[in-house]
Length: 107
Length: 164
Image 1 (cartoon, helix red, strand yellow):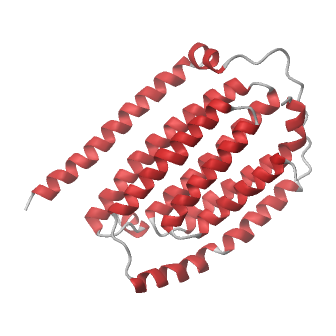
Image 2 (cartoon, rainbow over the protein chains, first blue to last red; image 1 turned 90 degrees about the vertical axis):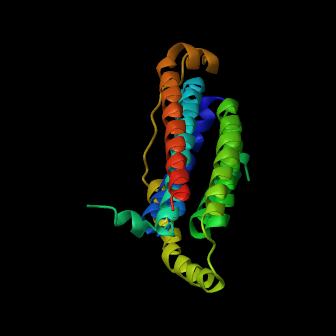
Image 3 (cartoon, each protein chain N blue to C red; image 1 turned 90 degrees about the horizontal axis):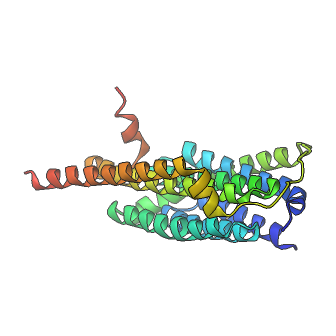
């Protein structure tokens, strides 16, 4: 598809990306469960992926956008793998995966 | 309804369902969101990114979430009811907040002024291996750090479990 097609759709896709970002932030701040916080972080990365693809489609440099998206996905999966390991560790230590246990770790 | 609008609508609907449902369903919803994003990426002409999104985000990360949920203790019946009530109270405003943000973004009236691209777009492999090599080095380093982190986390737990 030519970039001109995506100029017509940029407002729709950027609005969707903004909604996804807001939903992710809301999920992070309103959650009491650590797994749900990770779901919120995932939602934020989905929003960024969508904006990167839109930028690539608009500028006609989709290859560069794809390279960035692949890098983002690799970082995302590593972060989620380590974070889920931490959540399991916190669960084993405290007996639950509530955010308040992590808050209690502050000095 | 044209395909782009339909895919974007489905993406937003699934994402909003994901943030307000129970954890197990949220993991499924996240996979569905990834599938919708994959279809959109294919439609936008990014097949390699779409395949990565589908295999890693809809596949691997969902398995990670299910494993983590499986390793944590399930709630009893009373806990489930309590959790659902708390969820509906806490997450129903999310629809209103997202709607407000969506309307603000849609109605912002921002006009995109962009010059049409010149020349052909290079191949992904040329960009990945020729222009963004440093990204690849970073990815490998981050993967090593991630693997090291996971190994350390599980090693310490094993010791704790063995100790009386």
